[in-house]
Amino acid sequence: MVTDRIIAMLEKGGSVFRERWTRAAARGVPRNGKTGAPYRGANVLLLWEAAIEAGYASNVWLTYRQAQRLGAQVRRGERGVLCAHFERGAREHLDDADDVLAEGGVDEEALMARSGARAGVLLCRPFWLFNLAQIDGLPLEVVDLGIAAPAASQGPVERAMRLLGGCNATIRHGFDQAAYLPALDEIRLPWPRQFTSAEAQCATALHELVHWTGHPERLHRSFGRRFGDAAYAFEELVAELGSAFLLGHCGLVDATVEGHAAYIDAWLKVLRADRTAIFTAARLAEEAFAYILAREMPALGGSGSIA
Image (cartoon, one colour):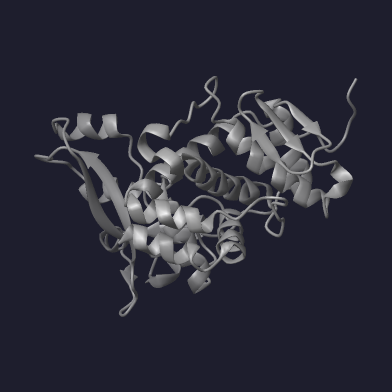
């Protein structure tokens, strides 16, 4: 069911889902209103899409039971967003199971330690989330979580350049199209003046930077054994999702990744053949996003000078 929903998003076309995911990402990663934990993997895509579709201003969510525990109530007729939680083996007992599921991305080893479950088959459990806008009677401190923080003082291009500069990737200009070459471990781009805007240049470079994180000396992504001839298309899906995280983080919500082929048909073929592929792609995209974000150059102070 989750894979079918992601496929439906992709079938809307690249310009549609890319803009929607990037705009949703600009609001931050969805998180739980009781635990504060961020959601992970494909759940992020599902919650982003739901928030944009319904026009929610908040990226904060609760389960029905969590809302009740806070003295609030989901309004009659509201529909929750189906999400997926993965765990290994059968659980004998787990305290606060609702909270664990609601977090949407608990570390497997920590979950196993708390539950006493034996390692075994990877199980998928569904759970449903409601946006703060669907709930009445919430405490003020929870409502405040859903109020967007003030926009960063740095512009989108500056934030993108701090990510690119912090990673210190080899970037060479003067080529017909953008690409990352794993054998040379370098990113190739057209000349800056060939892009339609500085925002488009940054968006394209960040897309290739996600590819750069997959090098064996970094995150070492390799899909040949699992996807065979479709491995290249799957890597492009990881880069598409990872760049959506990055563009949203920087505020490049209207930027276009230029000179980049559309792989939608290939992605759909992969997802229809492997019903768990989207969960892997989303997880790897998050890893790439976190890797790049951890290396972000600090912003310069508004006053003063560099000696």
